[in-house]
Amino acid sequence: MRSSKAIHPRHRRSLTSRSLSKGQVREQLVLFGTAKPKVINVSSVPQRSPFRYPGGKTWLIPYVRQWLSSCESHDKELIEPFAGGGIVSLTSVAEKRVRGALMVELDEDVAMLWETILSDDAQWLANKIISFSVTKANVDSVLRRNASSTRERAFAVLLKNRVSHGGILANGAGLLKHGENGRGLLSRWYPQTLRNRILDIQSYKERIKFVRGDGFKVLQKNAHRTDAVFFIDPPYTVAGRRLYRHSDVDHPELFRIASTLRGDFLITYDNSDEIKELALEHQFQIAAIPMKGTHHAEKTELVICRNLSWLKII
Image 1 (cartoon, rainbow, N blue to C red):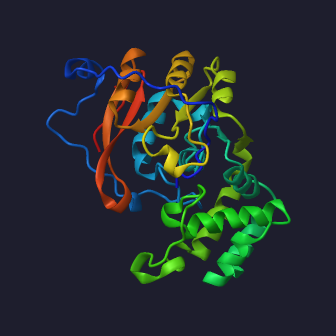
Image 2: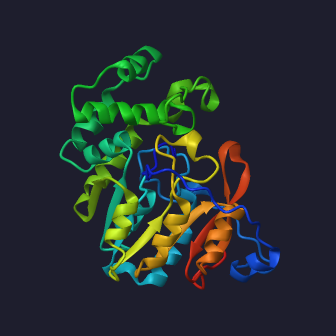
């Protein structure tokens, strides 16, 4: 669900409308020759996040591993300013590819769930998941109730995420009706799996820091660091408003800040001329990577970096 990706709340500046020529794009576009990258089968990637996150990056993990290897990142901290479902931070820490991770999320609900998962209340949450009976009446009761504690609200956030269409948490998202194989609300509710993921995160939580706040400010504060690497996955230019509660992002400003980072970074975005133009203006390299989106439709997303020489076809 990208439904609440940690987003910056300032008003989005309009991007320039000047279109790129094919020649200009080719200057910065990393090509794979005659070979075509394959769509990553996400079932081959360890599923570590309890979220169903719109815009989640499980499909990108094999490329993230390549990037981190090129950064010699084992003794560095990974900073993820738009954490959302957190799959990149979780994978990087669990696989010991970084010394630790700093996850940042602005959305209050998503942040509350991460704070609970990374606290001593994680065991309570895991037990609550196992004991909860998913029926329409029970789900409606939880989602209507004003939670009396942080952990109760965190459970409600996770429940809504798992039983909403596409995992969307933004206002107006509807609940699953038919779901997978006609299982309705149960089609994305796997209590034992969710419990195990939460308890697994507990086993390495000491190497994860979490900040509820503005990803832009965190990037600026840490721009000087050479002992950090940055995975930047903001709300996209097209679907952000539909998927996320905080979707207004100053994309030109984000690229400007990225250009000041002393540490290595990897940015992901939707494949649009607006973003290609911003990358070109800052002399970043871009590559289009195939993935499967909603309803399993194949499309491409952009990965953006100062130097993509590490990128190998998968």
